[in-house]
Image 1 (cartoon, rainbow, N blue to C red):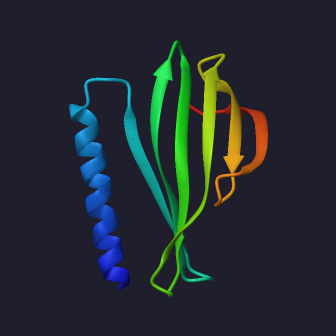
Image 2 (cartoon, helix red, strand yellow):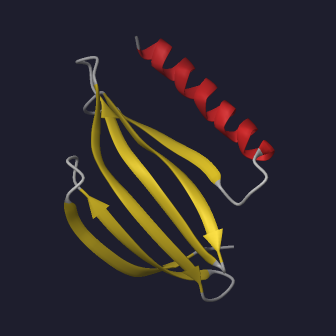
Length: 114
């Protein structure tokens, strides 16, 4: 079963990146996946990023998969990012629960090493 999931994930991620080249707009689909060795569970998110006047906005859905053969939606988030220098950005993140109810807001600054 794990082999099937890994193969499906690779195909999905390759398909998303191949389709991103064909989209004639600033909408960029993306996804991430993680495997936790200690718990034996998969998790990740699926989202889409767009930019408008320098502000990047990314709504995403967080998911998880365990050995019970079910994929669960863990929540959702919307992250807005505004670069203020070549390697410094400010951001805000609105988090929603798995029932899509308000869970919290975070604001912060990020630094990228180049």
